[in-house]
Length: 588
Ligand code: ARG
Image (spheres, rainbow, N blue to C red):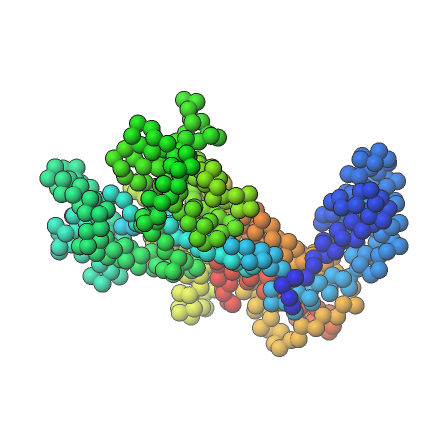
């Protein structure tokens, strides 16, 4: 089937009500027919209430008019329309329409989801750890949320460019390089290390030692400062060492990305240093346009929108008094590059909410410079903090930052125990694989299923539970359906649209019909938790369907129709999980 998708029943009903409004009240053509799923019927429209006020008439009278128009037209789409309360329209669709949706989605490898983003050039900035520093729990959310958005928008047909804005430049590297050169025996290269230490972890330790030496030894501090100058002026030996540090760190990040199953590859590594050659031009343009101005020897951009606690405009630092460039300068060059060279229509920056002001100022400056126009959408995708059991930012028992690798190892071993208990006969190799998929999936799901801007508590036992709104519950629901399908043997997916629907079948089919709407909503709001909520509802609708409607024991053609529901549910769960970056094992 094509990119235009399968129009959900909700959309079909909305179109019918809109058409009825056009015919009875042409002056109101084009208004929202306000159709929603309903517990009183399949759908309810509140159009009569909304319109009656504007037409200054009784909403019941208008409701009756609309019903008449719908009745005369309703070819085969609407089974019945009833007037309720002050003028609600309770709408039921016929069983065969519901079955037809099931079979149309089953026949489509996109499950009926249209490619609505239509090639929109979308740049997603996410993960962005810092070179020579270990990835910690603080990088978890940007990596997971950014990756899910890249998957959803890519599936919706956006032309997605992933950008991993690594922190690979700055004066701290002078100190680290000097220290490494003075300690040639230090082991920090990937190939010199044992499997359980990574290059960044070794570099992180060296960095701390360098910092201590810098503070304790004035001569080392001087040599470090000279090294910073050498690095910035492109001294070949210093640059070679720097680039080795970058490469070793990137290898270690790559291991975490592999483990997490995110899409980021080395092609997406575009660190801060990439923009060094563009800084001068960017600054010149900002000065020429009168946007960047001198302030006590520094070059700054004063905001025209945001003032600080002192009522003075908040500045963005373009060039420090000592001539140095920092985070702000790089982000100015970055947004300019993404718009003018990458041709972005949409720019997303996934970082924690504490960077909200930074991005607001960058966007404002880019608008004033004329780079960011109304045709381009720039958004800071902010998220809250991961909290520990004490309700404070998550730390190790000793109060240190939690290494991402340790956290993932813990999650996988907790998941292993839970899976082994539920399924004691699993062969060890299968158990390893499933523990990995469910442990990693649990961490990702817990992160994605809470609304982005909220903080959440990292609670492994709850995350890997088989019950409740967890990744493991969804993976298990999927695996259970797969087992039903295996037992059914080879079955065809011909749906007989003449079979009457049981209520639990209807509820499940209606939920399945919402998939495209949900995915589009995630693309529009950039809130993956909506997809999580949908999949959870779907899994629960499946459970009550399965409790009420025997599948394997039913006679044909009912059995075939129910198997079709099983198959579409399994595919929808698997697909939805894949958009979250979570595996859907066949067995658990
Ligand atoms: N490396 C930064 C950090 O660890 C995040 C970079 C986000 N992206 C950007 N374009 N500023 O906080």
